[in-house]
Image 1 (cartoon, protein in one colour):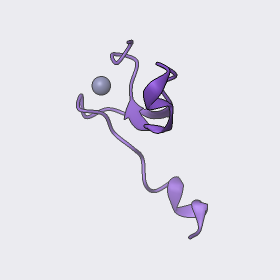
Image 2 (spheres, rainbow, N blue to C red):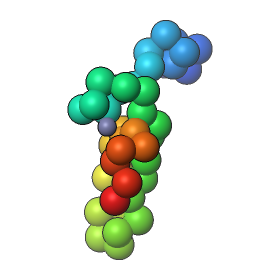
Image 3 (spheres, protein in one colour):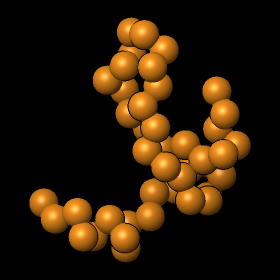
Image 4 (cartoon, rainbow, N blue to C red):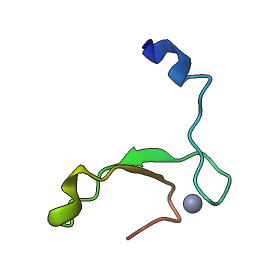
Length: 42
Ligand SMILES: [Zn+2]
């Protein structure tokens, strides 16, 4: 797996905009990673 493709692979949130990989530290689901944009402020 080459991360070079990451540039071409821009993750998008449900808002259809660029999103960053976020790791929610809500405690339990700490291993649950997802892509969230600014709108995804939770
Ligand atoms: Zn979003």
